[in-house]
Image 1 (cartoon, rainbow, N blue to C red):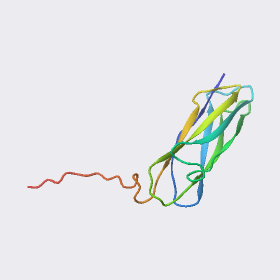
Image 2 (image 1 turned 45 degrees about the vertical axis):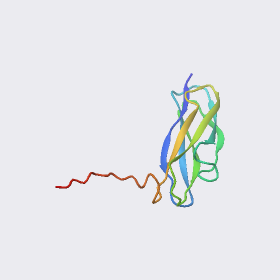
Image 3 (image 1 turned 90 degrees about the horizontal axis):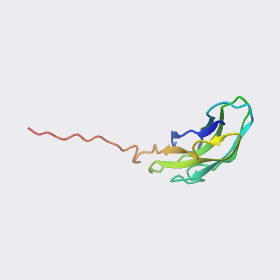
Image 4 (image 1 turned 180 degrees about the vertical axis):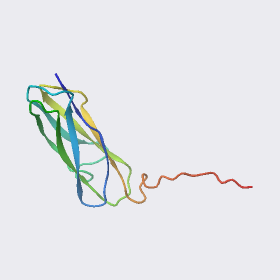
Length: 128
């Protein structure tokens, strides 16, 4: 029986509007049977309707296929903030087992003044 897993992603937030993130769910091997699994996004440090648009659904793997994708919308802004994450949880598989219950989507802030944009290397000053 194949295993189902969802990928982890790291993406930049963007400054305004919405951008799509494609999440991939994979089977460890193809099957002669139709395989299904439910997915749902869940808040972690990223909050639905502030940082991303919540998504739920059902993925169907036809016999012989090993990957399915779905999109999640990220909501960009210009507020400096820390890196945020949300989970994509899998449930109710048919004709497969879940390898790992969730994948993590990491949203890296790209705004001026955010912790990620202000990482500097400090070198010691040597005086003679």
